[in-house]
Length: 219
Image (cartoon, rainbow, N blue to C red; front, side):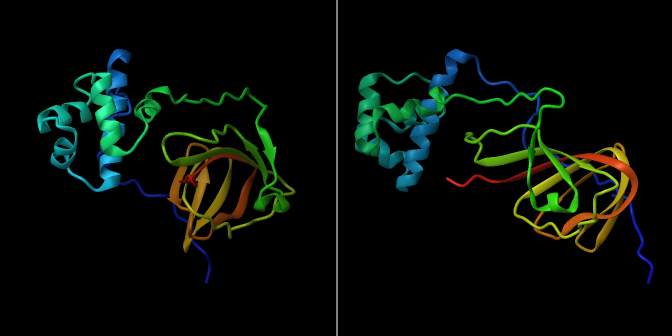
């Protein structure tokens, strides 16, 4: 039976769980937010309620709620009481505020060429950025992948996480599980990378596409 290809069908717009244009509170309030986040995180790790923590520190439930929500700036005496009750050093309250936020900048043509599973099939990988440790708990690997006349088809990649493809030039028929997608410049594909996937047919070369792979960060 002849194989058929299909283009990804458009799906209804999902409601975003966060606003991509959101901004944080003014910097002066970020310290209170960071302290509140750490208090709530440690409290939940211990499996105690706000009322339990209030009883252990002698504070009111309302005061603790304001601290956890970053609405007030707790005094050093208050932080010391929380530190003893939660069994954490005072410095831990400031971890989220002091942690550096990294960025990775790559000039055109300066991505790091890597050896990956598909390299032996003539697929050329250029890593466009990498942040080893971050606060999101997710690792993201953005690649520029180039296929040329020496490249082979390789529809059996399979790994953890999610993957997003964006076609820049050329044309390939890309497999994901039992489905085939004819991808041309401007087309995109987003999928669960645990299913077998990869280029099934190289229609027009050279072909270049962006591949962004994300998976849970291992601590």
